[in-house]
Amino acid sequence: MAKGDPGGTSRSRRAAPRTRKRAAGDPELVQLLTPEGERIDSVTGPDGTEYRVDFTDEEYRGLYRDLVLVRKLDAEATALQRQGELGIWASLLGQEAAQVGSGRALRTQDMAFPTYREHGVLYCRGIDPIMPLGLFRGVDQGGWDPNEFKFNMYTIVIGAQTLHATGYAMGITMDGKTGTDDGEAVIAYFGDGATSQGDVNEAFVWAGVFNSPMVFFCQNNQYAISEPLERQTRIPLYQRAAGFGFPGVRVDGNDVLATYAVTRTALDNARHGQGPSLIEAYTYRMGAHTTSDDPTRYRIASEVEAWQAKDPIARVKAFLEKQQIADADFFAEVDEQARRESVHLRERVLAMPNPEPVTMFDHVYPNGSPLLDEQRAQFSRYMESFEGSAH
Ligand SMILES: Cc1ncc(C[n+]2csc(CCOP(=O)(O)OP(=O)(O)O)c2C)c(N)n1
Ligand SMILES: [Mg+2]
Image 1 (tube, rainbow, N blue to C red):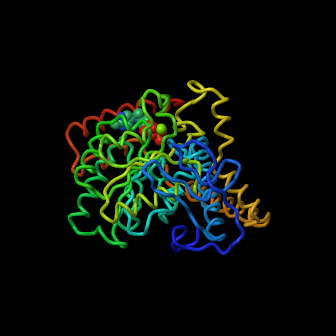
Image 2: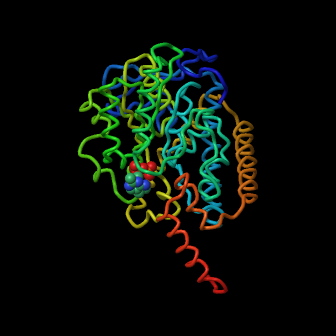
Image 3: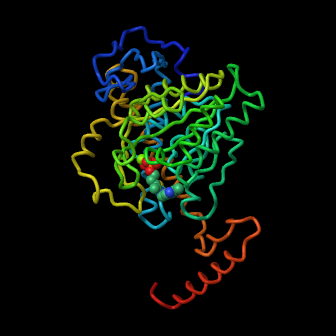
């Protein structure tokens, strides 16, 4: 979307009223755009905070463009895996609004710690979308500079990045980088399953007692691989924050506007020294956990269909159409850009080398280890045993 400071203080060019006060809905869920594309003017969160956005028409169109592009690039990556060009892919399908909303809420100086699924946040940070594909093809370790883009490397170890983020947040406080409008804040992404990890709970303790400039951003996509949410918790996840002494809020993670508003507020509170908070972005993983997973084994089609009706992109499109903020030419142009960028992505993946399986032992330790050397030799012998065979 357009550079600058969307939402918050910026004024819309349109004076015509196109919003309404919140109707009786789910009091636990902050929502500013309904699945039907109706705008809600403002919503009060559980701790009395009022959430609203005030985007210009260009900024609304920019958010739509972001959503469409990240979905298309993600679909291309899934196709590339299916065609044998990537080892594995973790799709963000269904979670575009949670990622674009929070990603665009970050200010330039803020630091983000992702999992392995945050391709939409990566995109918003200005990182070339080709970068994670090298990782998933096994030709490199990611490739972007975390300091340049303020976006850490992908983390596969569930929950580990929340501790890294909390340590980083404690560090920037000690460096005196918080407490002003230009202050820095830190966001850590993790999933619903990760909330059962010791690391995440330890991060909550440390961030809480040190009043760290942290936003814990949990994308509750309802599953940890095949394990449904009810295997992780008996209470709504956002309510866990109370036990650690900081605020928690549940936002409609399929609503890019509400996700933006809630994340921006939490980050600004953090940068001004008001401590951590937990955001539970309530969403749904529309695809498989990864391309190695078959979700039809553990969830029913009607559940997926119910979430289809809450699609994060369709509601923005409906809103743009109803309010005449965008016309058919705009939608066609965005589709064409998405097509072009995905073709470009594909061409660059096909130009990458084919990694030798044995290279997985490289870079585990900077100076190797006897055990690893032994495993490498064993693996090489195993691979050689296939030579000349059909495998
Ligand atoms: C410490 C650790 N344990 C187990 C795994 C295997 N694992 C990979 S993804 C995953 C589920 C994570 O679920 P969630 O936190 O909800 O994130 P999502 O994949 O749904 O985005 C598990 C158990 C791992 N990567 N790390
Ligand atoms: Mg999950």
